[in-house]
Image (tube, rainbow, N blue to C red; front, side):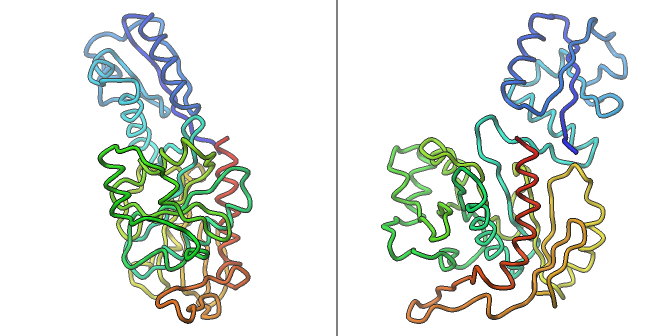
Length: 314
């Protein structure tokens, strides 16, 4: 089931309404717009800024349009209105931009980084465009999970964040690590979106996997994946939460460290398997994820669901 913004423009100036409609359609293909023949009476209930109408219709009147500095700002207000009415995020990829997949958790130790790396590797083999892998949260060194890292002349993450936040032109590829299995990876805690914009300008990035760590921001993700560790009290209601996810919402749950591979709707169980993670001798803290292991086999099921979500956005 696709999700769309169903918008009615109730503006006194119909030329302005038509121009605004054209701009909104340019910003997203997930919008249906109707221009009202007449402006609603001042003070009527459905003309109020906070009233978004019935049947998930979002009403834009002159007051709301004037309060937004641009069509982009108005679109963000409409997205929040959609979420308030439906309980779902509007899952729409920007025109020509990558689908952003956030992987996060409510607490540390849930396997977020391992899931993000494995997902990015699997998607890199399934998508026609590039897959980016950006580490923007968590603790420790996420680069420990990558392969071919010793062959890359990458710069420090602190330097990269400085370049991005100060809008300094640089060869962004100097900061990118090409993982053996395909993803273009980098670490940016301060400006992951700016990094993605720079990367998109020189590469055809079809999907970007963001490792958000624990407590990462999810609002701007087209797809959100939440991880939890089996046995953690905070994961006690995972099954019930997975069953309650609306069909139109692009969200799945990963329960890590379970006894066996299993799937129930939007809940994917990832088994505890020591053979799936091998510490690389002589490299300190480097860890190799076995792409032919049980953990990856379970992640392939979740990746297939993510791939279907990506296809439905096109």
